[in-house]
Length: 200
Image (cartoon, rainbow, N blue to C red; front, side, top):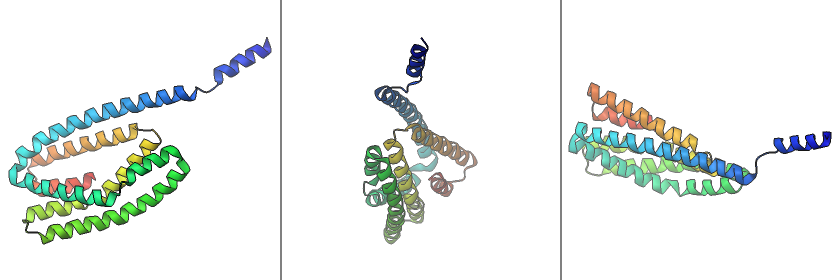
């Protein structure tokens, strides 16, 4: 009888089956990403409704040019490493950790180099002062954005998506509140460019 109760106790204390844990992890990640994406999309929609009305066509155009330069520089410097990090971390965390450390340094070096190159090209082109400021402000965020992408790639590899969802939502909340303050105090275009750097 004693043996039977000990065996039963061991069964109760046994860890959950791997497939059950996987289902639980998948469910948690799906809920986190669904809620986080919904919040992020909603806040982005509000932001995009406010900014054009406040800035007007010329300033929105300058911001769009800056974002285009940033996207191009980030794509060139990124080298698809975030996707590789996700795959390697998921397959072997020890190898993935070593690769992540190398990728961080590469992203810092390439991110800074591509940001400088994009800024130089932007300054050499026949843009107005406002557009040049937008290019400088937006491109200066490239190294930081690349490191954030690597962090997200690592989180996806270890199947912990809630941190990414929380980060995205918190960043969007911060940006929306700050934009609201800038609009309310009429701080203007250059304050928004400073906000983009601070947000990154």
